[in-house]
Each structure stands twice: as structure tokens, then as C-alpha cells.
Amino acid sequence: MAKRLDGKRVLITGASRGIGAAIAIAAAAEGARVLLAARKLPGLDAVAEHIRASGGEAEVFPCHVGQLDAVEALVNEAERRFGGLDGLVNNAATNPYFGPALGTPWAAFDKTFEVNVKGPFALSLQVGGRWVDAGQKGSIVNVSSILGLRAAPFQATYGMTKAALVSMTRTLAMELGSAGVRVNCVTPGLIDTRFAAAMTESPEILRQYTDRTAMGRVGQPEEVAGVVVHLLSDESAYTTGQIFAVDGGYLAS
Image (tube, rainbow, N blue to C red; front, side, top):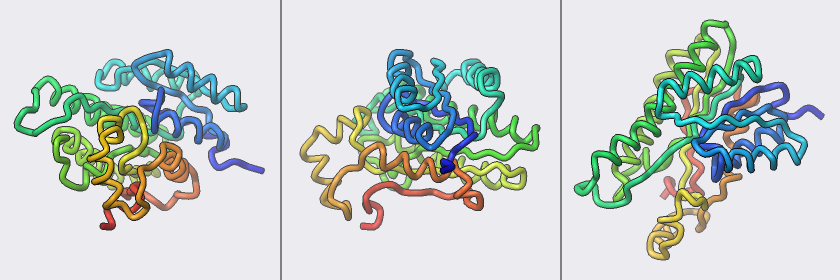
């Protein structure tokens, strides 16, 4: 039986743990050849070994997505190893400051925008531009956050960057759609990852979230990955410029 991503080559950033690792594992399970990128090699190797042990195909390449030369090297490496790409998942993110907006350190502000906005934009231009030049269809999926759609108390900079991803998704979808390049976005709610530990490990913050969420719980990385796989696949061939909340019903309240 054919799998949903058979024959597709997919680059996933921030793939060493959490949501990125779950996306990589799910995409490989559906037949994709995946290239995993993140800053630290040990975490990437662990995810790749898991995929290979399950019969999937995975390659790794360390990369700081906030650096333009590193982004170009990453896309060149994808072409060298796979002969090109069919999908890009912009998942890498950082959130170095958790606190009142008035206390935001400028170094944290710059780092957050570099990784969360500059990186995905640069990768989208590199990959999308090559698809357009080659007359090739492709799918870009940006991983944003519900904090890009609502106020983000104590996470102002992070929320701004995630709102920027929503805007970028819609604009690139309009500009690239006629070339057959689709661009969509998922906005996870509170997901049980190490990245979100500052919130999931605080009983007060956790209760504030779950009390407002229709499903009354936090999400799991695999529950985000399923939506991303759908958007990478031909099942969503007529879907672009859309924002998909994976939040257990938080935004419905």
C-alpha cells in the first residue's frame, strides 16, 4: 500500500527533539526521505537512528538557521544528498527570555528574530526560489504558535516572531501559488516538550491553559506532526495560505 509521502524529500529544521523530531519520524513513516537540521549533532543522530531502525531513510546536517551562509549550505546539501527537495518544514525556534515585555533584553530580542523569522524566511526563499526556477511544485509548512494569533504575556518577542510567520505564510502563498508552491502554517497550543517546560512545569500556568482548552489537556508532539504530514502530502494539493491551529480548542474559547 502506497504511503502518503512516498518519493518525497523533506527538510525539517529544529528536528533534534520535540515537535521537529515528531514531524521527522512521522514523515519518514509515511515514506519520505528526510533531512534533519538543528544546531547540535547528537540530538539529530538520535532521531535519525530511530527513523532508520524503523525502516525509514534519514540524513542529518547541523545548521544554525539564523545564519544566511549556513542556510544556503543546508539547501545545497539537500540537493547534493537527495537531488533536491519536495517539502520544507520551518520548525526551528528559540525563546530565550520569559518575562515582562518591559524587561526584554535586546540581545534576546535579536536572537529570537534571527532564528524564528530570519531563518524561516531565508530557507523559504532558498527552497521556494529553486522550485520556481525549476518549474517544480513543493510544499512549505511553517510552525508558528497560537501566541502569534493572540496576546503573549511574558513572551512578547516570541509572540511577535510567531505572528510574523503567519504573515509570511499568507504572503508567500499568494506570491508562489501560481508556480505550484504551497505555503501553510500550523499554530500549536501548549505542547508537552522541553521547549515549553517553563509553562508545563508551572501548575498555575498549566491550569490557566487547560481550564480554557476544550479538551482540557496539553498536546503531544505527534498530534502536531499529523497535521504537518497532511500539508506536505498531495492530500492537501489545493490548500495554501492557511493557518491550522492545533491547540485542543484553546482558540475556540
